[in-house]
Image (cartoon, rainbow, N blue to C red; front, side):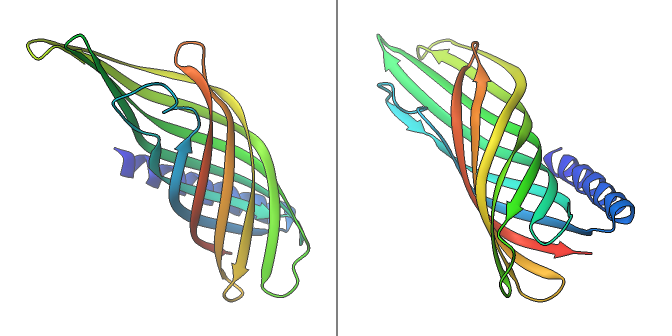
Length: 199
């Protein structure tokens, strides 16, 4: 299911970028990136075990309007973070993963040679899948649900042109106030790296 979602999203982004490129005369691009996400404050409580880092992958596409401005759309999947605690013979555990669809404006320093640095800011729709459970060794109860909302994102990035069509890109993304009153709000930092193709 995750692979199907990624492929559908990739096709949609490619079609959008191609349409925008034809309409505005800009350069379209498409890319993949993989890295690590860290959920802030997730492990601050007294827990027996906790993992606040997770694998993450993102598909993105956009239009380079000129030498220093891009409009970009993306989809990110973040794998599970989890925590557990035991007391009075009962063990409680929780895990969550996330889906993020974003729209971002990127402003870069005009390129000098093949290297460019840029800052970014935008908005995103987030969807968090979570599961909580409790067991006493004899019986187990569990519940799962979803929460969603809209939040802001910002960050920095760097792009290195291998040739006219292919670049390597590194990103630091800061996702602000993901969550709500039911599951709590947190910030998420993401470091990622991957290829980018222009057309």
